[in-house]
Length: 250
Image 1 (spheres, rainbow, N blue to C red):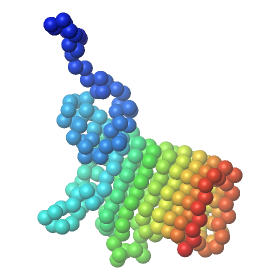
Image 2 (cartoon, one colour; image 1 turned 180 degrees about the vertical axis):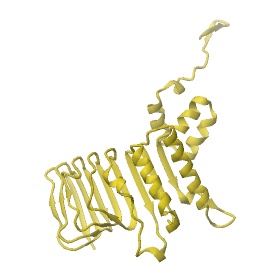
Image 3 (cartoon, rainbow, N blue to C red; image 1 turned 180 degrees about the horizontal axis):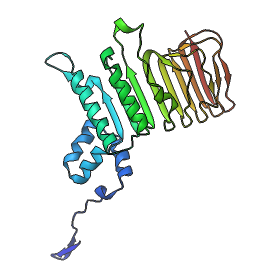
Image 4 (tube, one colour; image 1 turned 135 degrees about the vertical axis):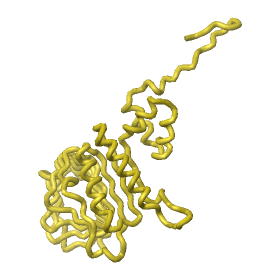
């Protein structure tokens, strides 16, 4: 409320930002680092709620580096991710983005990552980004994402960067718009067709293993980038709306 003092108007400060809808504030906060977003929770109960329900979840193992030991603190990292996802399930919050990055994904954590992937798909995640380096000793027995990831009705963005992880034949991603795969092995029976990917517009395949007789048949596909892949033969492409294509074979 304005106050008149010594012949001029003195305005009372009003916090208009806090009164914005959750969705708008979440979108604004999504441009900040997740640790900065966490600090906003001390401002008030309103901002504490915004942090608890913040749907853009970005977690990277390298950010939990223990300077005393000279290695990443993997236990702290996994405890934080696990706690956050349990909270989202408890209060039934929606998840817009789940971005998970492992500097080194050890075999004993595979089942935990499986659990996380099932939880985020259950909470209707829209953007899923998974990056993982594997120990050299298990490269012949790579990690595979759970099947729920590949039959999600909510995913619009899927990015996988993981050596020899299998992209399976049984896929149904009706809302997927963007797919980016790096170092992924594509199942020999998989066909990228309109039935499995009716909305896909962007596809990027980098350093992937592509089987013989591989086909891409996507009516809405606009951008296709195939770079450094091991190909078993020619790729058959039917994409009438394609506007940009780059193919560099190994």
